[in-house]
Image 1 (cartoon, helix red, strand yellow):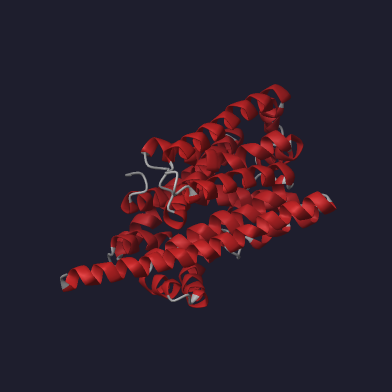
Image 2: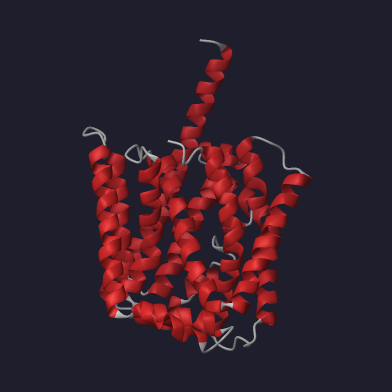
Length: 353
């Protein structure tokens, strides 16, 4: 075997070691969702003020920072240096798309809210597809169609199950977000929370879940169904989670300790310094590296939050109003973030089985 082949094999083993560490961290943090299920079942729903805590913490813990290294991940994934041109590309992307979407909230808040739900569904779904492939080795997702179906299912769990299980709270959050811009406009969303619509969503989405897991079971090899079992267990567990835990609390915990953490681990794996630290099991080193890289644009995200807060027609006066303002900020930042993650998917071959 040549020296280059030996080096490539060693690099492959090191990368696999990093992914195994990332998988363990992801699984450990995901267990917090199980704790939330048990706590809710045994003790009931916590007070509304307590339900906002995870979302409030996400401003600086995992949530907002998870997209704050977008200017670094694409060059790192390509093995290229970070240049002024690459920084300008991401900066322009955020400025153009973010500004256009922010304007949409002022001009058509109901449409902007619906777009927020759809974009989040796609983005959270694509994050889980990557995690299934990289952390679990999901060989049953062997085609692009199966991965697209998994995207819809995984992204639909946090967006659609709460609509079915907690329509009043879902309507409250939607009304609070839209109400920042036009208090009367939220009435246009009321049909979405009616029982016939929720029943249709439950039947349609439930069919997609069954189809995705059923096809995956058929594709999984009989002697290697471990990845499919992980996929199925996570899917069923998330259904129970979002059908049991109140949506404000459920989304806050999921945003921090499921979606954001998984994306942060992905960015660490493409960073030579943080990735090497993960391979050695030096998680604290990788975390410090990420925190350093994410700090400047996390602060920038807070400036966007302040700017939108100063511009909204109705001054936020309550905790729900402030959290609604934060969610609008997340929405504005998510749209360009999805474009960056889509580029990262393309580089890493997520949609090229």
